[in-house]
Length: 151
Image (cartoon, rainbow, N blue to C red; front, side, top):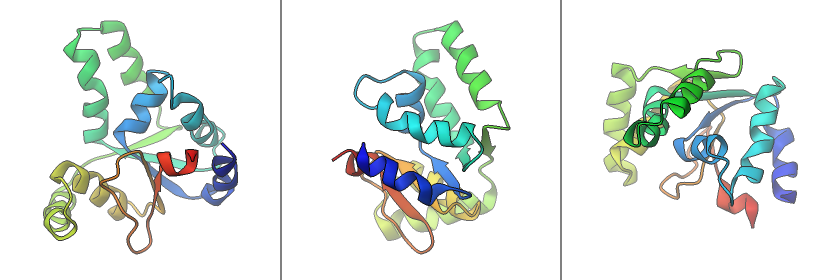
């Protein structure tokens, strides 16, 4: 947790793209990762950093509650993502899809991962918070791999 507290000040005033797994850890209060992601969400809640994600992350996060027909959780998750003061949910435009199609084969990424990365890049995010090893820092966007900051 020391690495996280050292990292947080670097995020102040920055746009941070949040990958699906981070939302799942937070919203599901994941036993192993909840305490690790909580400080990031507190930073966003305090307005010290700007959280962004894409429509695909919302859909991926809602998948399990829909799969098990958990109406209450579906409602809670939708309310969470609709709080525009807390998080900006970005659309996946034609430009985003084209960039994703270009990035996926060039960087050996799955198309869905490239879609998230392209959305973050075109939105001007400085950081990309994930626990998916399929991402790597490039150019002006630094990937924060949660597992790395826990070790």
